[in-house]
Length: 110
Ligand SMILES: [Zn+2]
Image (tube, rainbow, N blue to C red; front, side, top):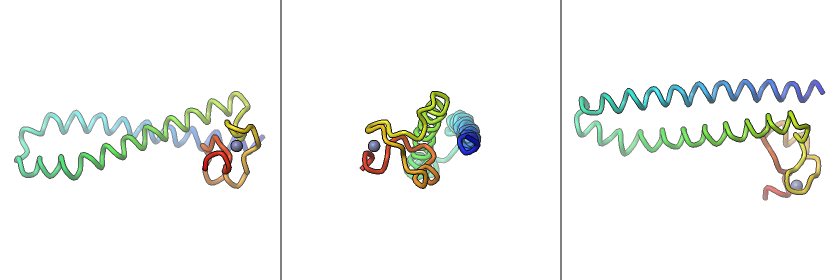
């Protein structure tokens, strides 16, 4: 059981960090939107073509990860954590150690 507690703790920790990251993104977005008029159009253009897509990607990735973590925490509480959602088999412990949010066994996620 201590193993599950450890997983839960590390997931909670990751969740906190992700929420903070998403929070800072939201703040930066507001800041950037306000300051866009003061940036020269060339710089603005570069920002739009190079930085903005990257930020969008990180944001989307963080959002997805957060959903996975919340889902895993839910499964921990329900006691279904570590079991494949598709075939119901126990997920390999090695796999869970690498991907703590794995909801399917290796076979089913192919
Ligand atoms: Zn499976």
